[in-house]
Image 1 (cartoon, rainbow, N blue to C red):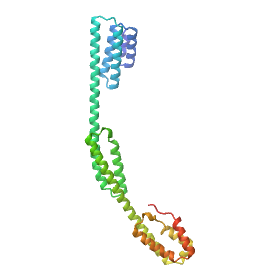
Image 2 (cartoon, helix red, strand yellow):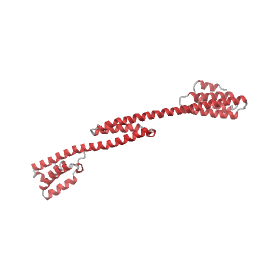
Image 3 (cartoon, one colour):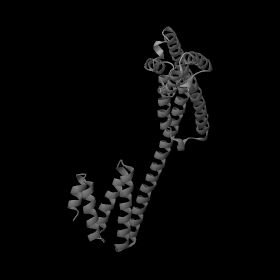
Image 4 (cartoon, one colour):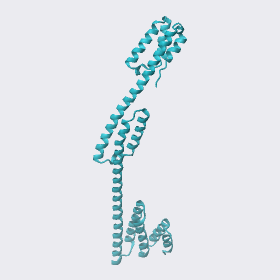
Length: 275
């Protein structure tokens, strides 16, 4: 009766062995031989398989088979003692699974805490990268690395001490980033203003070199659009604007009414440099 079951079991064909064992027990609910063989196999699977989910599953199946046999067997003192022994074995297996699960959860929590510690240390170190970021490229690179490290920190698993450290680092990084962005923007504006002043000087020099030529509106537009009106006034320093006004006023004063109108229109229409 158990030959096919034993064949599959000995061949480690778990799915087939379970199928046959369950079928045998359902068709022979009074058979202690069938129950013992099937229950023992389920318990061994629950005790030895590497996957915790599989072990839980087979322990549950062993519990079902034990309950089924207990309800259908012709009981006597020996069978009652045997059933109690099976129940004790199953309880031991279930407790062992619970202990292993708790241990695994504790190990996982310990690893998460350790990983978070490493992440916080790395964020602390990355402050130096921010501080030393003298160019936009270095600044962007530091930000990317900070975001990558921050994304690996498990926020919901931070300890109380880690939360304090993380919040402090977040504030420090935020303040640093704002400060560095201002500095980099200022450096960009310095370079922008240098180019603007040079362009205004070029406009002044070229216009004075040949005023009559630039009274032609096409020549005036060519000069003004590439120099005088090529820069965004909102990014210019006061000193730069003073020089701009000086150049603009000089050119404006040398034009006739049509030229003044054209120059004003050019100042509105010309595209500004954004870089």
